[in-house]
Length: 162
Image (cartoon, rainbow, N blue to C red; front, side, top):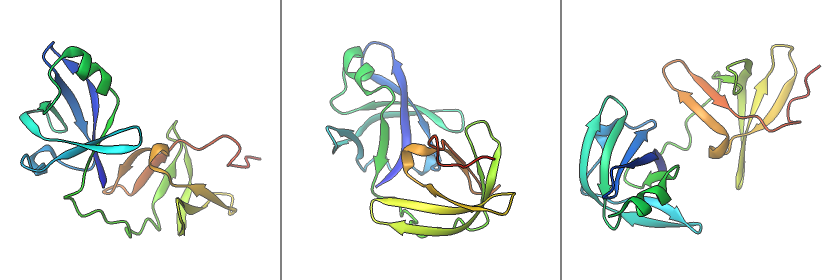
């Protein structure tokens, strides 16, 4: 499944949610298909009852089964997934610029290592050394396919800064 959005916050008292989209435009959402939110590690399907676009990458939505402020607040911060988008897991990141959480250039992707359960990328540093970085979705802060940049939270100790 592809992570398409994140619940930003509740809106009002009747379960409405403000969500923000990632690499998917709100107009590309199929309102007849379910979206999924993980509970206890398992994806739970929800359907859209209402959908009002707000700007270019946000929407006010109402999901089935979410009908109170308490229910909506419980979902705040939750990623939203969909399985009807074709996820290009083989997208070649070679040549992309990697930035840290302060937008400092770490280096350029030189290769991808598909370790089961732990995908990684080889990044060539400006110094010429090559480092292996984890590419877990929780570490990705932003991706810009037009600029070919990927901003990551780099775990402490992974980079050997000299």
